[in-house]
Length: 414
Image 1 (cartoon, rainbow, N blue to C red):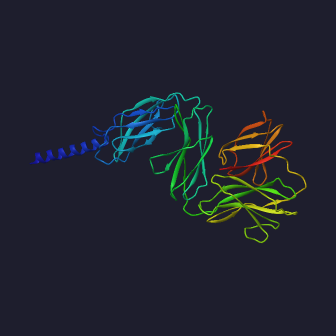
Image 2 (image 1 turned 30 degrees about the vertical axis):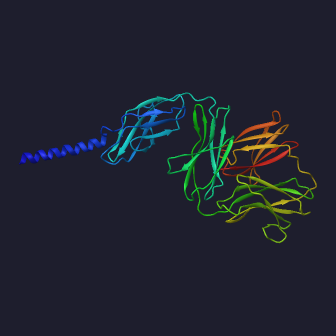
Image 3 (image 1 turned 90 degrees about the horizontal axis):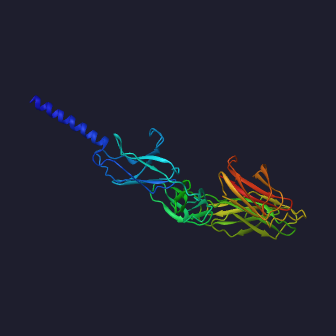
């Protein structure tokens, strides 16, 4: 009887050890090998096809990958995957002409079980691979947002381009093709108080190039829009051009109205006595807006840009307009492109129709000079990349000026 009890105890201990061992190292269906496909200069797809039945529930499954030159996996990347019997993930942060090691794993409460290590080498990059930049979203509202990006290529190698977007907790990317260098797309029918993420992309014969992924949250409370009043131009004794910049429409989606108010008394508001209101037609995606007024006061005129939505009315700063009897410097011949705008680190400035030594002056919203450079146009054009990394977030003005021309563009640094 005592021998039988000892035998049963031994069998129980062996069974318990066997259960732990099966769960810890996996069984015949534990990860053993993976497939590496779609190997591009900067990306690859990892796929594990073996079954993963374990006694304890699987907490996570995925892949670890590292440079083959590293001696250990301590600094490896961890790419979580979804799926059950077969799971897969694509990584997009690889370097061309580089050797990597990758292995699959499953994780239970007892730790990770690894498959065999697979080695692969990324090919050389396409010399004409496009530069893809995902820019910050604008005009974020409860049910819509504007996606922004820049795609630059030195050849005609792009097969398709645009944006991929999804809810943060989704595994499926939606694709929207958009043409052009500075690209944008109005995303509609969104859910409020949800986090979305998106990225710009460009497809060539060598593969897909992605910009960085940006996430943002849609609000659920209606907020005011925002505009800035710019200086008036083309001032005569009987007319002037009022200028404004649309910063945001807010997240209210109805009753959007844009324009200017002006009067011969300070601080004009809509519906005040002796105040004129001029409505500028609003279109989705617009930024700068202007209007010509001909009802002009012989003395000082006070003007403000405004925007109204279902949350209320927001007014820009007040400006004073005085006619001095002198015509403004002619700037009609200047053609200025400034992109991306808003920007975070770099902007591209292109000026056409300019001659002679030209100053490029950056001022802040208080009128202080931040930076001044001098340029000599080539064939009537100036092309310059401006570093914004030392500028704080806010509104700035870039003034293009030579002996006969002067024109100002507004810049928003995010």
